Length: 201
Image 1 (spheres, rainbow, N blue to C red):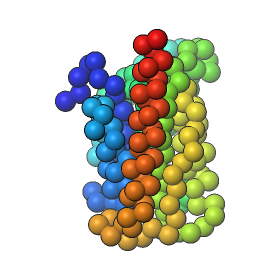
Image 2: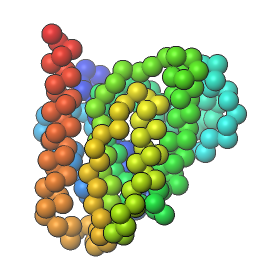
Image 3: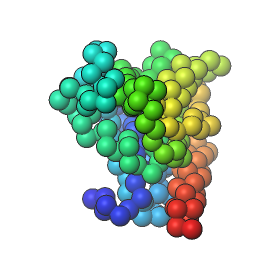
Image 4: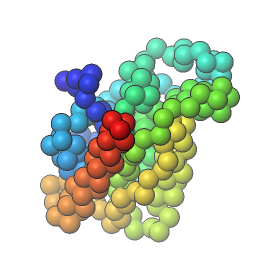
């Protein structure tokens, strides 16, 4: 249970698989946050009821999204989390469909920012990407999608931690990849704690 006074880290696990390489790398990235007592709010879009955006434009005047589904739980967390970390596989050079539905439903935040001039505070973020392919452009679509998703909630796109040629069982992930993910998470936690110090000055 996350206490209301705790720093909160929203962890979005985009893989549809129960056991996946990106999910395991996310596990290691979250170790430092757990050790520091930061509250982890972890969501897997594939296990949620999230309808796609149908461009009804209801949100353009500040009204809430009319769809009655699990995004109602995600919206306030996207507003209040102290940081966001995303882990995703590459599906045809993009994010998996359930994750894209979650992202598209953030048109609500785009409308608030670019139509109503209501911006959220900037916060740190992390992005972990995994592909079985070794293509040099395999993450381009993912990066653009996540960049503009984060932009809608006033977060700058971080430098992603990207791994190509990863097509093994998650239990067989090389130690250097696990270590790199843990170090990546530690750097993100350092940014969260630095923000906290700045707030308390």
